[in-house]
Image (cartoon, rainbow, N blue to C red; front, side, top):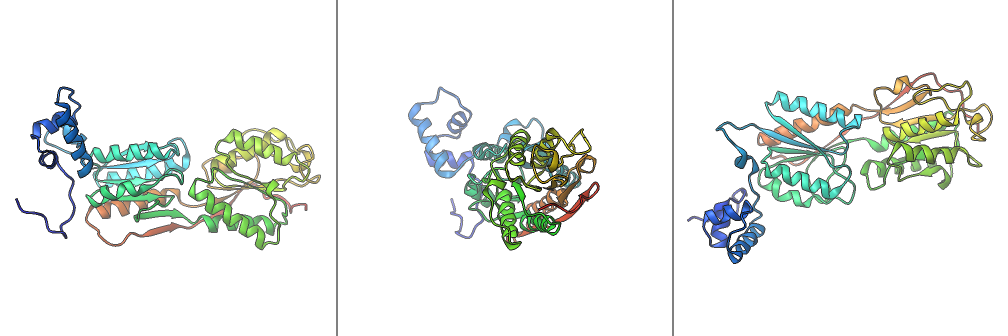
Length: 369
């Protein structure tokens, strides 16, 4: 049998390759791979060792086929199916897949790196034609996908870059968005600006928090650790942290929330503390002057949130958001993926989605100092 040349494109090892490597029959390999317990233990161990050496993966799609027809599929792994941000990405990717006569399989990793790894490899076992991936936290290491990519399963990363892997990536301009938020607040006279962040294992949080702190320094505002809160992953955690900030001895006159979930927590805290004029409902209005000493009398707590969301304009408390086209992340990512599936071998590229500030509701008066 001829040996492939070193320049030949890698291919996925088959059960025939495993049988040859383990020096057993193809039937024996099939029985071991499918979990049949009656195989001789010594032969089964040889098969398992060969599977590991060759990087063999069972073709779950072939196993399950009952007809001669097959469907093109791509996998999408996101963080939270319930979050409007990820829902927008998924909707755009699904539309692009539909236009390419391809089925989109969607799963959620819930910020768990091991869960992410397991789900992506399961998708590869099912012979998806490509992967769209929003990586889990910084503990994720994507080197395990190199073999899958080399064997013909391209991957495009969305919102966050991969770790230890070069691949197409679509990102938000996090630094510019955070910088514009702080500049907006300092231009309006705020000197005590609170910042609330999600887990710092999440790449966009690191970029946004770093840019916000740099913008505060450039504005001549000293670093105030009492006005920085991170590790807030839920609305409830954010509400509690913001309430403590606003009822402290030197509370902020403005707050910058680094994602949409944190923004809801900020608005919830303001609503619970009450506001001058007594506006309630979703989000509520919060006045620093009426929040148990939270700020000088009559000065409002101004809020800027990173990420726009559908009901932002309906919030009772005026809200400015760092906005961008979330659906463009999914659309551009899917378009890149389908070009790779079609045979594009060019160098991996990074696309950055621009941001802009959008003001919802009536503007607050200038801030007290």
